[in-house]
Image (cartoon, rainbow, N blue to C red; front, side):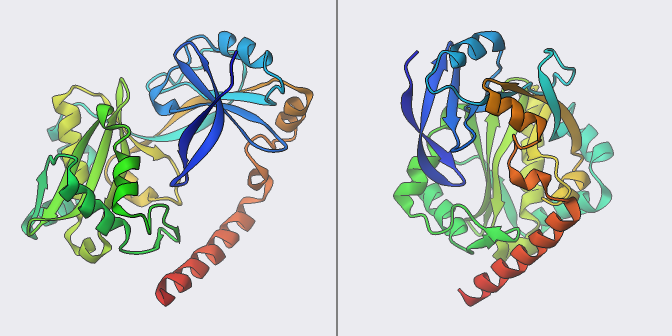
Length: 306
């Protein structure tokens, strides 16, 4: 099996990595001391024959230390006997827009969605043209820090944004929020089989009083109803990361099995010592929270200086 180079986006930057193709599954090889094999684009890819992937990876030299893959929504019941851990995804079950609006959406979030329209926010389905990209660049470069950490896309120019965000238009719809004919927020809604993915949802901080994200999300729910997509995903379930926003808009934690298959002795030892997800996962939760608070305070000071 041939190892090939490919370019992927990692934390907002293009990175060249090793990869292998096993049928329709693209597996990325990464890491230094502990080599990990993982499925590229895993929110959009099912691993229907994990044994074929495992056998192929065992034939590599050097062999990765472990292989990890996830069982996608809506299949929460484990299908395989490999070692696994629950991974929480933020999922909104969608039947109809009215059901979401009247029964799943919390009172305050409903008022915020109404407020957007009253304050002049207009929702459109734009084309990915130069005007739209220029609007994206302006939003990205509004501030270097978002949610208490450096913003991945801050500082990118027009050509970079156009190149990076045009890659997956074949499986995405664009939703734009406009105020006085100017783009102030957008969603890139990806289609992943039985669920849709909020691959990017962002709006201008300057217009936060207009509840732009609430209006964008409402349109995403409408699209899911129209396309008969029963689930909408908003990344992972994390109380620290937009947890209140997700809960108020009807998202729930949906645990899917993440499997870990050791391929070397080092991989088995890493799994037994719980080091397969990085050193930060063995740090006590209370210490992690203190470190996050200090990090956020630092980046807020940096942003104010800029």
